Each structure stands twice: as C-alpha cells, then as structure tokens.
Image 1 (cartoon, rainbow, N blue to C red):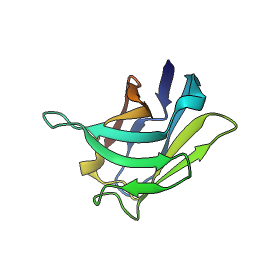
Image 2 (image 1 turned 180 degrees about the horizontal axis):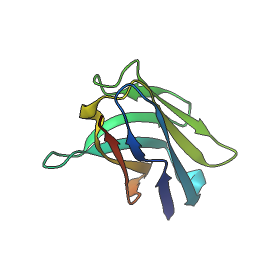
Image 3 (image 1 turned 90 degrees about the vertical axis):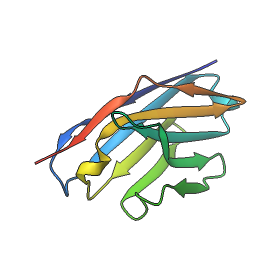
Length: 114
C-alpha cells in the first residue's frame, strides 16, 4: 500500500512559477514510476509528466520546456517545477504512484489568472 500527498498549489499570475510536491509513504520501494496528472473543469484527467525509477522522464507536449519533474529518493518526494505558467495550466493537479496499480493523492488546485 502506498499513500501520496500533494502540496504547493495556489494562485499565480501568468508567467510566474510554482513548485508542487508529492510525498509518498508506505510501500515506497514497490513504486515503479511517479507521475503528475491534471484535470481542468469539465475535462478529462491528463498526464502532465512522469519519472521512472531510472529517472527517465516524459512530458505532455503542452508543458515541454516549461515544467520539470524530479525525484528526491531520500525524501520519497517527487516535485513538479512549473515555470512560465499560462491560464490554460489552471487545473487540479494529482500525484500518482505507479506500483502494479495506481495510487492517487487528493489533488492540489493550481490557478493561473491575472
């Protein structure tokens, strides 16, 4: 069993930055990959970024060059650094631990608005 808890969301203006954190606990050793998803109102939940146990990463085209996913193994934490934020990045961001099955956090709201 794995538990994940997100933090770091908030309200920012276009062009600003935010860093989201996702702390994992429980059977952390069983995790194969960690990912960030987002869901805007009325839309489906989409993959934003993923990082594997050998630190391979992949990003949605819409965030490439602006967002960076990283992992601190000592702290069992995954980060999503979001730069040059746009209004279309507004969504609830969810952390997901992938270990045979997917474990989801409760989500954190990111709002980009002037």
